[in-house]
Image 1: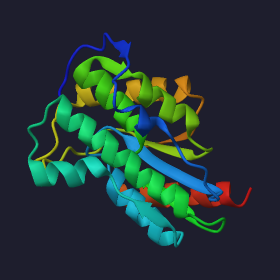
Image 2: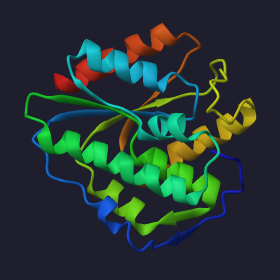
Image 3: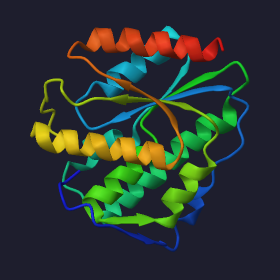
Length: 203
């Protein structure tokens, strides 16, 4: 995501409304790991899915950009949003009551990405988030070391902290239940996420 001012408009993008449709699911336990880049989200999501014997839903943006390069425009973003919705929907539709779904990103990230990069939030992004079944969010803080993997764009800590605050605002906007995961040690973060997830499952 490229840095820009956060002055935004809401728009409707004809042809992408279908991405807003969230299917019914039998799954009762769902978790999403979100936050600014290079905070251990993907590693944590994979760890959590394995520890819980759950199903990991990968981040479509990473799969797309690894294939197409990190140079992207709004058409690429729309393709990524569509791909993310497809992966999420497939997992939701096929899940059983016993399945635990762990999302390595979801449309909260798509919302923030569209807001920061393109200064626009299409209605279908908002609509999709509003249709999500209840899930627990783990929001990673940005104080860990930034690692350049060829796809990341925000090495400056001040920018990362600013984006982190945007995530809090968006999670609050949609009344999401979330935990802020802090600390410089990735393994300690993973242990905390697992502990919190187990507490939620056993409620």
